[in-house]
Image 1: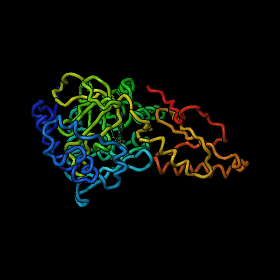
Image 2: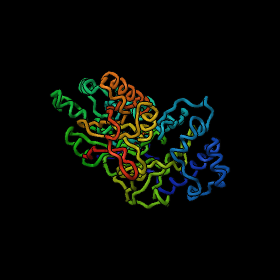
Image 3: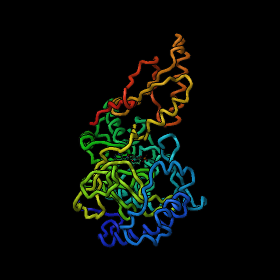
Image 4: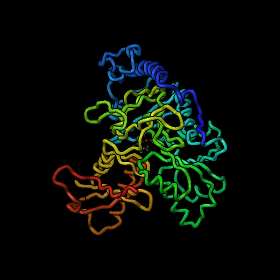
Length: 436
Ligand code: DLL
């Protein structure tokens, strides 16, 4: 199949021109970042007082890293680089202890993001003739709106159904002849199991492609989904700090995810020494956005592990390709696409007076979806035989957790001393979801 581009000039840009462009954009970004209290302080300490202090791309190394904790501490406006009047949208994502991180967007920021999403979609061979069903949730999460605007700008027929209600999803897929679906891999597998349950034969669907991301999955899972549905699955990577989906996406050749290097400076570092690693060496992804004005982020440590593929892609896009995400450097859990930190759970349950000292978070598979069970020890005086009282407590814990982590866990109440205690570091999370 002939490769097709959305922005051929930028997608196939040669290395020297790319580096010139990156340097110019990096200077602009540093200049914009200096408008925020956070970066003014940080960059001045590193001897950077203006964008012009960045003389070559090597000077990137002089810029300190930015972490999720920095974003949390800057909440809500410490990293805002424009007048609030210029901001047209915000997105937030979960923070480690419940303080969210916020990303502001100007109209131009959103336009740039949309442009990148258009490139991604076109790189998979999709066109305006396609019907695009977006099963990612709309709202503060970037999966819904992120791809939505790109698909619309390309001229696809967009079904903005959002997440959940699988029966309706399938009905829409049938009625409107959906050809491209956007989902988490676990939800895609769930749709398949529901098709079987409802006895709907595959030939009633028109699906050709799926864009899957927001959570880790293996090459085997991709293969499995492709075989189940007889479709092509494309891996999509992104994070809200870097807009959301549209950072890295596979093209028709499915050999790594092109990362749009005219919009993101991509580095892979050794997470321990922070030394930059060369191609094919696995390390932590560090990204700098080059075209965002409202919340410019410099050398953001994503905590995602991957490597950069060597060599050129057959599609002739020159932007380097990231491997599948192989893990994280922190303890963030991804549960049906939702990011959850164990510390958020702990914070909630430990402020409930009836809860004792020990708890455990168990992750299991429920069919193809993830299930989270929060087991908490409560004081023995509460086990009086009054079931209603225990049910009320369970419901209260569930409600408070749901408010904090968005998803609704199963809550189990246990007697004191009944949950395992480890002698060294407490092992709070038992993840028995097996990777397919
Ligand atoms: O998950 C953005 C997104 C939406 C990407 C839809 C792709 C599709 P956050 O909620 O901020 O944003 O979560 C970002 O999710 O740091 C990774 O750990 C993980 N992640 C995202 N895509 C992939 C992927 C969105 N393809 C975090 N494979 C990231 C593995 C992924 N992990």
